[in-house]
Length: 542
Image 1 (tube, rainbow, N blue to C red):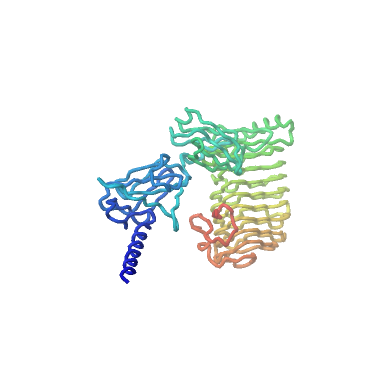
Image 2: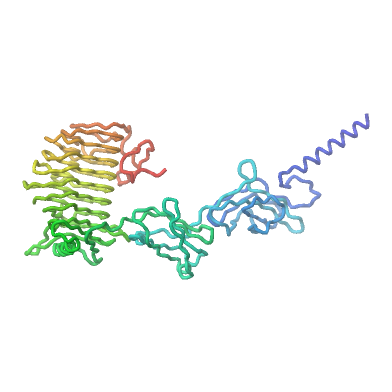
């Protein structure tokens, strides 16, 4: 019996010794005879940055300092690795530096005291075991400004003197170029990247050897559109006069070798404000006439703020033209009241507006008037913004006579904020169709006016992914005699028509304030993910 009791005592002691050895790498509960400094306890917390990490843990009583070791390997050996970053903390919260962006790191910490062995390591953990943290992507590049982006050229800049060696360019995920950096470029922190394709999204990466130190995503602007003759205005020019228009036309004729069918692109420098008007013999401003046979594009150049056309007189499109186009410009009413107010006869293939903002136009964007026959095969509006069209006596698009022929009015990817008259008045006109797609309308249709007045026409009106939010008055009307077809289009609860109602195929139960971020201040960012309609520029990226 005594012998059995002795065995029992020895067995119990062995269990105690075995338990004392199972500490998961920390020594806070080991035998004090080792005289070892206690290790930090609990969890290590890490706040990640690009080339550094803020590290915090519980302090240890009596510790003089702490060693923090970081490595891309897992740190399973007790000795400090020669490839590690080792830093001494004097407090239990500090920052370890010298890391590389977008890299996985393992981390551990131990306490140091005078006259005692170092503590065991406390490891950074994720989940139930040892883990790693990943540094954020490093960004040495400065953001690109409008002045840094030109036709085919990007002016890149970064923190001058940084350790970098090359720039790598990708398009659609495929590498398209690699450019070694000279000592001068590195010291200046600047490189001009040339030869880029227009309207292309590029990823520009900055490297030091194989380590990425910066990245930019940028879409290049459209190039100056093709034409028989391209003419770039001097930045000091503030008026396109009739004389200048005629001079450009003569050079375009010579380049085309034709007196009756020729084209010109007029480049307007970024950041400028110009007018387009002629001058009468009495010195009064007159409308500039596009010379007969001339097709013309007014094109806002990149490299700064979008140029402004502050128009004092309407543009005259009499005669025959394949197209009249405006791209990448802001149009303001400088007294013209109408961008087009056409009374003389014209035959025009295309009148188009792309990436255009129209602000405070008192009356119409396009108005045809008088009895002379006028024909426009297509009016195209794409990626445009119209704000605060006045309550003058005409619709935004106004051609209400049997003397006028409009092939199609096509409006897409655009926003219309505050229209105080009808959107379109095409009464009695010869018009084949109105197509509106991916557009946002807010605060539209003046008192007693119509979205579309198609009396005597019964024009087909095709709506696709359109949002109608808030009518401007209690007496706003819908569509008179048009034939509406709707797909993925919505009314908000505050879009209320008093008569001539038309319907759309989708329902949004809330108001415009429920659907948009801040509609009263022109922010139509969608707050509701279930609605995927309207101007695509307001749909948040996933």
